[in-house]
Length: 116
Image (cartoon, rainbow, N blue to C red; front, side):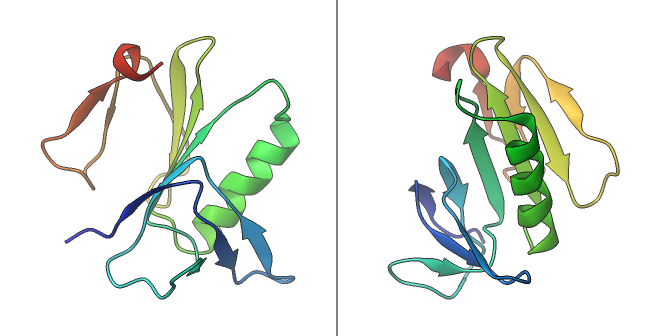
């Protein structure tokens, strides 16, 4: 069972200090507490990189999401049509150039060319 999909939903992360993040697209954990915003990181995060994003900022977001319970964080680069996928189970990110596929979403494949 999966949670809900949102565009730009707010999440209150439990780090020290607590912080607010609002990913471009997110998938919540099943029964994740929240209403107008959610507590803790979502199950999956999709951040679309814009010209204003810095590497330091993106790395900080990825680390915060994973530390607070996200299973996967996708950082999508529309200009170069690829994504870096970070997950709690693997120490190294993987590069995707064709599609979004995840064990968390069995049977689902979203071609990057169709969404970028």
